[in-house]
Image 1 (cartoon, rainbow, N blue to C red):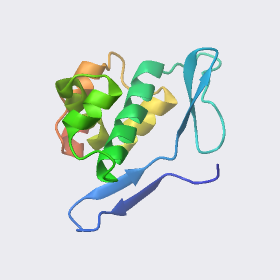
Image 2: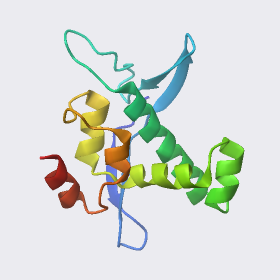
Image 3: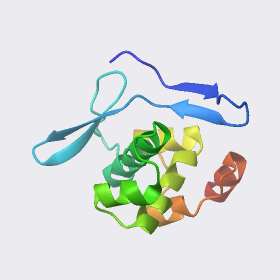
Length: 135
């Protein structure tokens, strides 16, 4: 897996598309994120990572991809197949608009202390506002 993260303008020019090539693998009953460089991101020597946040962000991006590809026409249809509530899925889709540096910090385990899923899905859409809230 040699693909690097990319940031491009959307087709309409009004949005920025940030793609992080991640793979999720199950090992020993646990989900593990495999980074673009092939590492599994296991924390070492005092590093920490909130695996729950990382996996949830990856799942949100996967759900967004399924909607954008046309595989699912509505959030309700996807939620039904995913076995989750419509409102939960809609909240989690908000994670796809997090600032790229914030996503990177979560994946690296360097996110601000006390960051939670609830705080993330209540973040504003504007990246500078997200950064301001977490400063």
